[in-house]
Image (cartoon, rainbow, N blue to C red; front, side):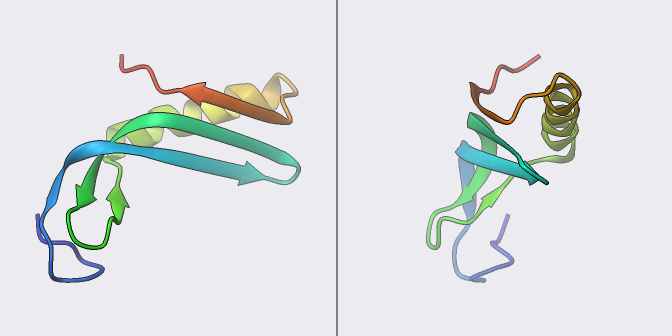
Length: 75
């Protein structure tokens, strides 16, 4: 797809590091599948992956995690 940010590049399959913060909780997910712009590097994570990240983040918050770094594992 054409990058909506820079409007110059096309996106390609790649990976991203996603950081989620809520109050005093910081969660980092590495190697998340994403579409990455070949020009500006902007990263786009699809809806299904985003839902999985948010569910994992909610579980971590409920477990009392304050800081966590995880490698994303596809279902």
